[in-house]
Image 1 (cartoon, rainbow, N blue to C red):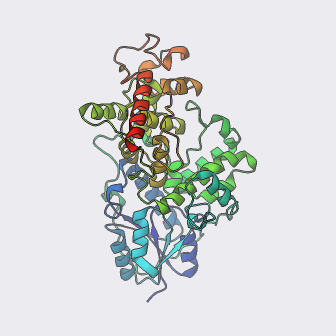
Image 2 (cartoon, one colour):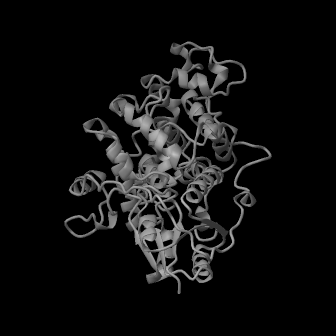
Image 3 (cartoon, rainbow, N blue to C red):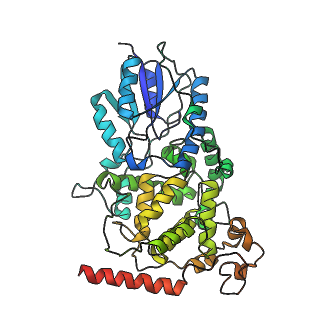
Length: 454
């Protein structure tokens, strides 16, 4: 057997601070493998927006590997079978990978067994080692963060290998273009050009954010400003590591965002103990969700940004156009679906899964359950967010003008609630339901659920 080292890639598409690549490069010639696997994740196969990102991220990584003398092999199929086949074809001595926390990847890692060497690289600190006094996993973020803090700051990031020797025996690879990950007819991803997928794009975003992180706390909730990091898709696809972000943010100015990185770790910790996070409620509240034709029609209106609530519509249109939505607006739009429309949170989570470039199984499930009041650590269902007040409070007027152009002529005092001011233009939809009516309906549904469960 040769000394060839196989690096199995998933959501870790980078060379810097990539322990699997570092270990492999020290041991021998390196062969990198990415498997487009729609079978192992089952119902959680990646959505259309992620596929667009994946195409460009793989193209970037392939370029970087070739520049260092390495090779990237692309194959389709069930990951375990393809990895085993590749190990046999290339006569590899060892298989390296990054620890992942989605249940389907954990099962795949177990199936590969001792042949696979796993390295930490997706988190600040391995969540399986963060345990409560009773030895179990944490369900609440506050105690988890205090326990995690004892292991912070994380280690310094590893430098990217300067040279990767490719093995003489290099198996055949698929052509990335043949995977047809990019939309064509129609090309709904034209607006995705705002992004630069890949490790270099991630580094540029981080450099920009590090210069502005001191204002993050005051600007993060203002959708009309560029106050967020825009790092979420890069983190999700593993083009940059949490450790790199942590150490790039300087001193205490970056602490607010560091807690967001810790929340990301927390979601993975919860996932270890609750693998059905994306589909099964942690604390079922017994709520009777609306179903039927009208409910389906409301879901369609929500997904297309036609609810009659400008802040919600702006967010949903931003999502469709760019594959991303501002964090504060995500909360507002998700709350509207769950509490104003009384629809099952899983229907919204599925839409996000297909349309977000940063659709992360742990974060997506955790955050939707937080909104729905079904998570271990969540907002109570009876707290009904007022989208019109939220829009005004967080100064969303210019954000609405950008994404709901039919309202762009309205002044700040009317744009948040044009129907109340008799200023809605012809063609803009009537609100699906009034806020007061929606709030009373949601609270009544909550009371009914409590009564049935008592």
